[in-house]
Length: 195
Length: 195
DNA sequence: TACTTTGTAAAGTTTAAATTGCATAGATTA
DNA sequence: TAATCTATGCAATTTAAACTTTACAAAGTA
Image (cartoon, rainbow over all chains, first blue to last red; front, side):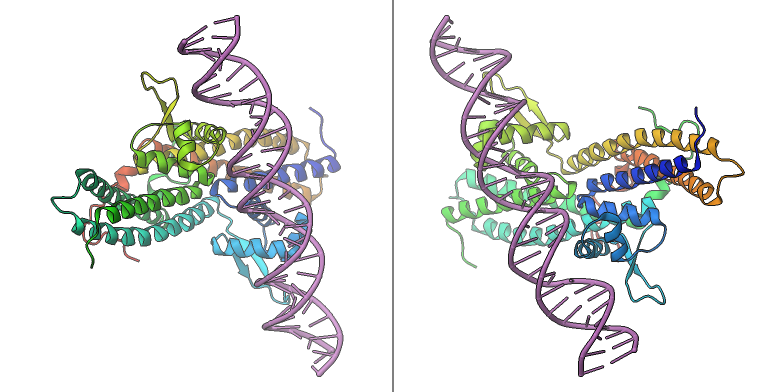
């Protein structure tokens, strides 16, 4: 294989770094966030230090307004933070540099929100079902009785599920997950679990 | 509070069931699938038995073509399956009725795909980095040296991360997660973890 | 055989999301 | 105080996704 000139090396480096950025962006979509969120995460991460909105706009070729919107979204998702840089008035944004930590932030932020939305509705529905139950009598058609009963059981299953997710989120957030699935695989050679 | 007539009960039941379906659909978006996927999941789930494309189209008011598209997607995601019904030539589709199992199917399907896409790229990139390394010499500018080194370390971190996700997926898929976060919470009274 | 029924591909349309350009508030400097 | 610069709200536009219509192949039925 040919040895590479310095110029070729630089080109290769840039290409490889860009591919990593692209893939980070790509993977981020699995969390249901827009690809630009992933793009910025990749760019700031690979830059290895905090960046301004202007720098990001420059890098992506997008408008500064969009950069502002996306960074705000990332702050809300807990995967970026503002960083003070003395001597500069501009806001500098940095991202979590630990992949697994980013995973956990996104996972917990997303699901915590779902759990919250859900438990509220569950409480409201349960009140209504209880009300229905008090309206049942011996003259109520059996079909209706069954449906109310089924609905009540459905709410139980529902509650159990969201309670499970809630505990799951905590399992991740508290770091307990790392006790059972450690970052570094203990089995060095055979690092793939059996089929 | 007023007691409800049978007609009112039926209306209330329908309203509650619809709200559950809607919320299932809503929550499904957290997995990054379209809301219609969630809608169909909710409808078939609440129907408690397999449904045909025509029935789904009827229920949703959408075209049969769209139902076909979405069901195919759900099969790919492992959250639905075809079910043979004798005496009918139509295809009948059913869905997983266990919430937690659905969660796991979606989680593992999505991330397994990410891991796969990723490991392929990682291998290719590593070859190229190795090639770059052989091209380095004592005359190579230190800046280039550093970047190659940084890239190489980045690939290590990357590999460790995806390997972690791979093991994480297995942790869910194999059901080990339930050993540590059981479906039914053991602490009945205090079923919320401390802040 | 011709005639239905079912499911899906291809192409076209509609709807929703992402993105931009402009305008402006707030903060900083001179 | 005016002059300047940053970040963001908002309306307008572009782009991508969801969805529909039409068309057709495969398999069944009469």
